[in-house]
Image (cartoon, rainbow, N blue to C red; front, side, top):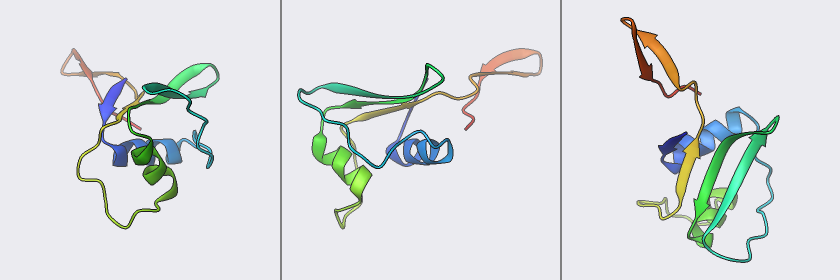
Amino acid sequence: MYLVDYKIFNEFVNKNELGKNEIPVIRNLPAIIEYKRNGVIMAKIEVLSLNELKFLKNKTLNTSLKSTINKYWIRGNEWKTIDNQQVKELCY
């Protein structure tokens, strides 16, 4: 899994149709929200700020986030061969 910023995370979730428009019920922080496909975790958010999560889902704030508290992870095609060497590649 790759640690990415929220813009890449949202693009990944949208392109792969992983997310729903509803915000899950979170009772305690920190929390982890997982997006799965066929039992495989494709993306996840480590939630420390509910306000940030609400902003990303609803786009209700007029300002863009300059720094994020939550951590956003996505799964990509993690290994690729370049010049006979295995390297990690972010691909979505």
